[in-house]
Image (cartoon, rainbow, N blue to C red; front, side, top):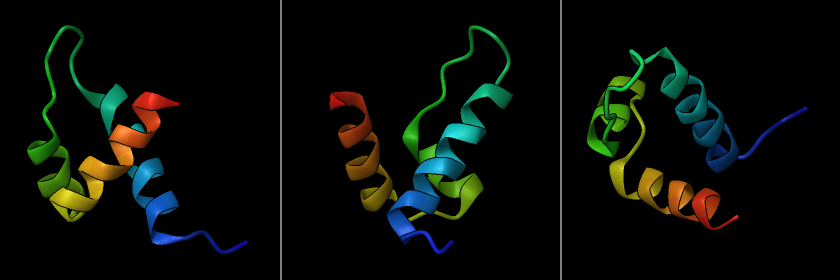
Amino acid sequence: MIYSNACEYAFRALIYLPQMPEGEICKLPEISENEDIPYHFLAKIMQSLTRG
C-alpha cells in the first residue's frame, strides 16, 4: 500500500514522540529536524491531528 507524504510524515512524527523521555517537552522544530520533515508541512499535519 502506498501512503501520501502527509500520511508518512504523520506516522514518523507520532512514532518519534514516545521516544522522548517522560515529562520532556518536544517542539515541532526538533521533530522536523530529526525526522527530516519540512517544518511548515509538519505544523499543518499536527494541527489537523490535534483538531481530530
